[in-house]
Image (cartoon, rainbow, N blue to C red; front, side):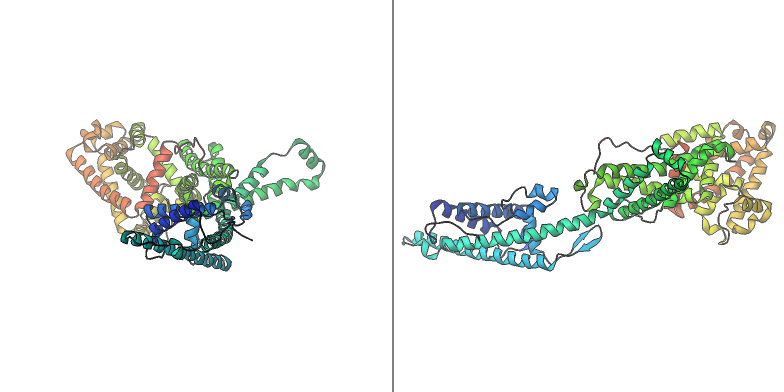
Length: 564
């Protein structure tokens, strides 16, 4: 039973009266017509005044030598809350008071709604009743003080004890408040801990899958292999481990997707980037080890390796984070979007895996971009200029790149790289002509059935290119050099460097030839704008992929200090 100790329950000592007087003055600063509401907590000044009032309640209770309500429940709090409530002292906090006033509100964490229990709401109402009871007693004290001032100014004698609340009345309301506060604090914080545990479950599940993968990646020990070799019945153990690892990997990717959907506020928060992206990237890296057995040129496989490596690196960066955070889960903010280390890795992961979805899973797109880069690298003069543009992030690059993509398309509309234009400008191609993915379908296209899938605008562009290229090849200076090869290099040089720096061979061409080329370039420029504007997001992604592959991979910044 809570109790207080005094020789006279109705009178105050000088120190007790001073403490209650200070409490009354602190109460006066936060109250408006005797009523304290949530609006008082808005604003730094009001918040500080409320802290001062709560501290004054604690000081008054100590001055009155009031027993503290039991708070042994705090030993069951999590580490974070033990830091806020380190011992059994009162430790009144404004956020607990605010929660008792707002007990009918919903709590939203990571997009999930939580509601306090009926028991917590009942304790909140009891706390508010005790809060109002203390306010009433302090208002009575304030009126007594005002009356004393009034009578003293008039020169009359006044017995302050007649209007002031009795000592036992003040002690009773403070004890009632402390008991109600402790009961609500216990229930409210306990429920908050459960809510936070559930909110962190997304990351806890991911840590469990990562731990399982690390365990399954450990090689079998020598004696374990000896047991397996001596018992053929145990050979299935190896295949079972492989199946378990794949299942754990799929589970981890699902967890990363869920984490991304609730925590990644910097991008889209996609949760549909599945394990197939990682599997495809690993398969590409495996193929890159045996590139001599594949028809694609070496430069193309270097580009593919850069893309696939970026997908895998982003995945491994998430795993490294999970490995670290598994040792300090109490530091994870339940509102997962507040953990900047997690958000930064998820942002990188989503960006890389979005590219992987389009360029790893869709093999035709991977072959198209790799083939385009391999073709560009064949021209050393063109390569050096583009390399400089990419390294310097030159604005000219994003004017030149669509011209190059279109020129390589019109030069050979049935090649792998044609899939890029078909994907970025699908409205110019018939619905039943999806980008070709197999060598047989490309062979059929080359036999003469390609025109059927293009609209009239594409056909006009192809015809315009053919006529212009024939005129350029017939130019004496180019014809005397190497014919079609010189004409093609001159055309590309014109697209990259512009009319004034297209090269000496171009400058020596007849005026009519140069005019034909300039007319084609104007047509290409019109298509270039459409290529960039039809779906800017897709084009920007392709531009980023091209630069990334051309430079040999994306430079991922190293994390010097771990950040939750």
